[in-house]
Image (cartoon, rainbow, N blue to C red; front, side, top):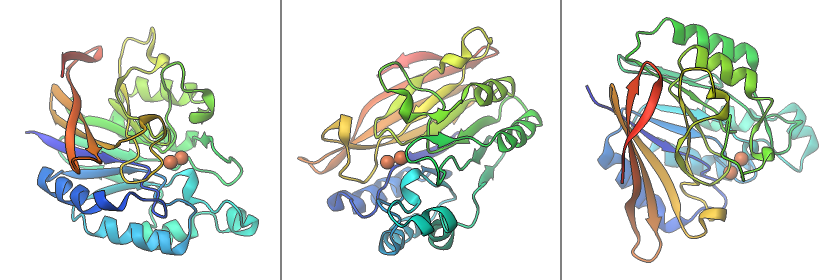
Amino acid sequence: MRKTIVHISDLHFGRINKPLIQPLIDKIKAVKPDVIVISGDITMRARTKEFVAARDFLKSLDFPQIIVPGNHDIPLYNVYSRFFRSLNKFRHYITEDLEPAYRDDRIAIYGLNSARSFALVRGVVDMNQIRKICAEFDKLPQDVLRIVVTHHPFDLPDGFGAHNLQRKPDEAVKLLINSKVDLMLAGHTHKSLIDHVPKQANGRGYTPLVIQAGTSTSVRTRRESYYNSFNIISVDYPRMIIENVFWDRESCEFFSKRSREFQHSDKGWGVVGIN
Ligand SMILES: [Fe+2]
Ligand SMILES: [Fe+2]
């Protein structure tokens, strides 16, 4: 049975590209995803009015949601709030659950908070939580897609710079690969990637994928200078299609920029089609 995941990220309410909000809602509703993954940076500066706007946006999407915080969801300038009430607003307005999970007969998704008060930009992974997630993955049949979600990516291609990553991700990725993780979904770079194989997979006999969503709603499009984007992951094991959807400001439409089709084997995921 086919399952569909919409992956959005880096919403940055407070600095949003307003004209695309309703079309984005309409597009996601048309996709009818089984679950929506939101990989952090919900707000720009963790202000109350930003969280209220983000909450209203997320409430308009009546699908199961897995939401993790990003570095922008922790107050930056107010030192007391940064260290003593770091995720209070996120927990109040978005979700109390900082270890969100979604499970059905085809997909298992675990979210992990990688944002920390003492780390301005980089993420920090919680190894105890990684071990807990791996223990859950180890109980699953092979045909259930194993997904972990963080704001900060576990790995990126050369050229991105280490400041984009989690600190010391190697041990975490090795444990996840041992538990046959399929997808590591993240954001933070505002640059989409739909087929990156993490370097930690080299020589380990199993290939998961690092999937990045660009910024879905903010004006901080950075490297993708003109476009907002998100991903649609559609899996019918052992086949999976990952589609990269972009917003064109001139035509005010979402369009499918590229997609990859993958086939699963006992060695993990391999590309079988490029569009
Ligand atoms: Fe961001
Ligand atoms: Fe970020």
